Image (cartoon, rainbow, N blue to C red):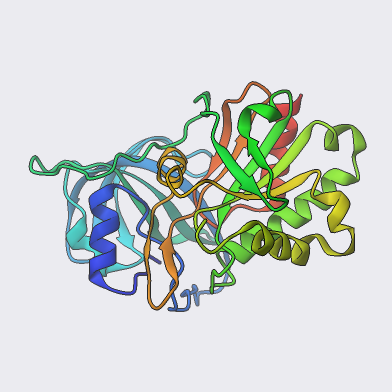
Length: 300
């Protein structure tokens, strides 16, 4: 569901081309139908819309359907005014699968990657990570107060995600960190692969996420072996002047939320041994097994 604390923030995300989802106080909604929910990433162009649906001309969706044009119900109809025919989007198709097949397809986690309106002039251009993109040598301060940079991990496969330590929603930053903790544990069980990989949790809140805060946060997920594990998993934040460039390259939209919270999108990437994007997970739907598969492929 596209959730936002106010129409202002939703419109702001639409204007800058960032995902219209983030850390909010509203609880997620769930399917009530019997069956198992499945999700599929999709990319396409909006052909038309009504109060509750958009018709999407989309590319093939592996495991779901071939390229075609068809209507989808919006998971959150309140954002229909922010979408326009001709807009190019990425999104998540949510369906319920039972013995009769797939049912109740809805469109969620919509990201406008190209706006069709001729008067649209984005204040910020967000990069949509794609396989093969070279990652800049971004620098950041880690949990030990040491400056690290992405070039130093050349020769290893890096799994990077974006968080902020004050995130109030369990399904957002804490979920990413739990996933990373599970991945770190499973990589450690394979010493050969462990030596070829590195984990990186990047904060987009450098003002509050100081090295000490990041270290304490990391220890909550690394446990009693935190001292040794920091050698394989860094928690770091770019300098304030650089954080926007990092966010924009990895497709992370961030604005102030209610109180001192931040409304933000999610982004997790696998960076191969040559410093190029090998896989991108733009939502909170991915599972550790999917990331591990992408890591193994990139390390092979």
